[in-house]
Amino acid sequence: MKEVYLDTYGCQMNVADSERMELLLFHSGYTRTHEKENADLILINTCSIREKAEQKIFSLFGHLKPLKEKNPDLILGLTGCLAQQEGERLLGKVPHLDLILGPDHVENIAHAVDCIRETGKPMVWNMWDERKNYSIPKLENSSLRHPGASAFVNIIKGCDKFCSFCVVPFTRGREKSREAEEIYNEIRQLVDQGAKEIILLGQNVNAYGKRGMDRPVAFHELLYDIAEIPGVERLRFTTSYPRDFTRELVLAYRDIDILMNHLHLPVQSGNDRILSDMRRGHTAQEYLDLVAMLKSETPGISLSTDIIVGYPGETEEEFQDTLDLMQQVGFSSSFMFAYSPRPGTPAALLPDSVPEPAKHERLQKTIEHQARLTETQAQCFLGKDVEVLIEGRSSKNGYEWKGRNPEYWRMLCSGPSIKVGDRVKIRVEAFSGHTLMGKVSKEEFAGAL
Image (cartoon, rainbow, N blue to C red; front, side):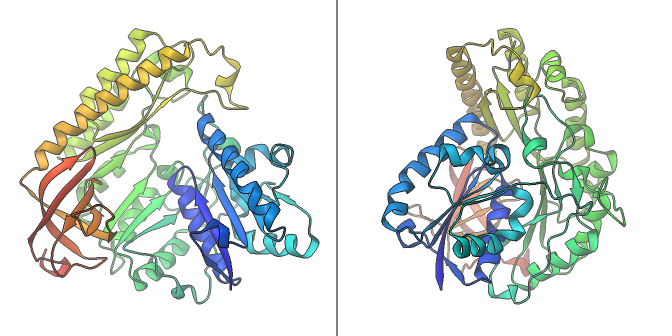
């Protein structure tokens, strides 16, 4: 069999797309290699949401050029959001590229590679899929691939919100939802292959059911139905948009036992003027009210978020509002970024008025503030038994296994008779950042919990 090397940047949607491409290529005669030098095909699945991510990708392709010169039959492919955003312009920036494939054409990866091998010419495939429906066809013999203890399931793609700083609507298109029955069938298949936890994915996952469906199902109804599928032991979803978070969805956290008590809920800023300029569609207080409702119905729920500092025009006082909101919510973790203008977005037309040193200083303050919040919460786990779903082997000395607790903290642990897919009770002995560490407190697995 031929060998493919896959590298993925960006969000969990990109991770899921890479897994899908790997599966499609497996059915086309490729096995995955972790050595670029052995590959017949190298695919870099890209992100364009931050300028720094693009710079890393261009640097990486510079390092791949000698491999292409040594082996002219090697196919170099760039997929994902940067492929959608830049299209043919990438051939000028990276002339040794063979394939440019946008997210709408993941299903065509094997055909595209075959065409390149037949013609010897580069291919750019980033036109939009004009079909109303979003579907991921089932593959025969896909049971040959093991999904692991935790499996991603795409349920919606695209975003209709058009936040002023964000390229997602331009790289992933408009919102389209998959039919519920197709989702249920995929989950059943994953459970049959050994998956214990299902993570539903979408750029705006709680907009599910609003567009692109023959038989519309509301997102909270989808969750209740998935919870009834035998073998699903844990359920999660990401990423949510505050404005689309309904009262029914809040109650689903209260009512569905297997829906884990963690939510990633991007806020971006704690200042109302900045939120308005970002076109987020909610105020800081409305966000806090939603958080209060969640905490009231689901005590102990863990919240994570996205933060942008240094948005055009942001003052020190407005930045302080963000730190204050973080403190009020008590996020367990955050993805934190200094603003960088993205091509084609409304914010890119604004003067980037916050100096780079000030952006860097604000980002550092935000990181340090989040570290304090994380440490305070981590200390609450010390000496306590937590349930962990074992996802795989740990590479850290002294700990054999890694997994996640219900609140989505990473857990490193050791203990007897453990295997991937087990749910075990771990006594927390230490922590480092957002990672907890400990040993099995009782040899209790799924059936005894």
